[in-house]
Amino acid sequence: MDERDHQIGLHGLALLRSGVKGDSLGVHRHRSAIAELIGDPREAASRRLPVVGVQEGYAAWATSYDERRNPTIRAEEPVVRRLLADRPAGVAVDVGTGTGRHATWLAEQGHDVIGVDTSRAMLEVARMRAPDLEWIEADLRALPLDDASADVVVCGLTLSHLPKLDGIAELARILRPGGRLVVSNPHPLATEVLHARAWTTTEDGIRVQVPEWAHGLGAYVSRFVACGLVPTALEEPAHDGEDPMLEGMPAALVWAADRPEDR
Image (tube, rainbow, N blue to C red; front, side):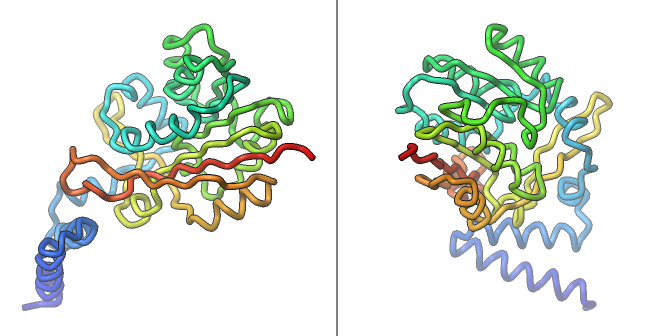
């Protein structure tokens, strides 16, 4: 028995132990390790997808984005909406709006909505979805909006595409006193441990992934505080039962951070 066989055996024992304990994360980790050791092409390919830039990835994904049942969105979306449901109607800016899922909901709640995204292809879908809303193509780190111009700012599943959370400064800059910022991202466990990535299939049938980075809880708190915001809620919604391997595991982080009223 060589070293590889020894490692497969150890991971096999650990896999059995994780299964008996009901440790879904352990099951996934050891199953993936065994797949890599034995060269399972299905598992190995899923963990080493070609990486493309955000613009290229979302250009390929735009027309099918709303069709795929995204487990992170299923976990994140109800929490984001609950954290915003009691906000009085005002100016709402949805940064990283994508195809406009949060923006159109905010408009239904009576807000005057501006949707911002760096992907022209995604914004084209958003415009078809809600032609009466204002859509702006811009980088979230350089928003073409005035200071303190928004009552609500939302940034859904977007900051994970940045190596650092420096985009929070711009989100805070446009938020008025008394306003609320809601930020969601894939949970760092999913990004760092399960190696989950935003992925899509190109026109020529190649499955690709968009870069994502895991950000720890302390990094969020530090950024919020440095920008004059007060974190008021943190939720970690779990995956539903559609994928038994992931059921109960955290899918996303959803933060609410408020700008205090001027005194």
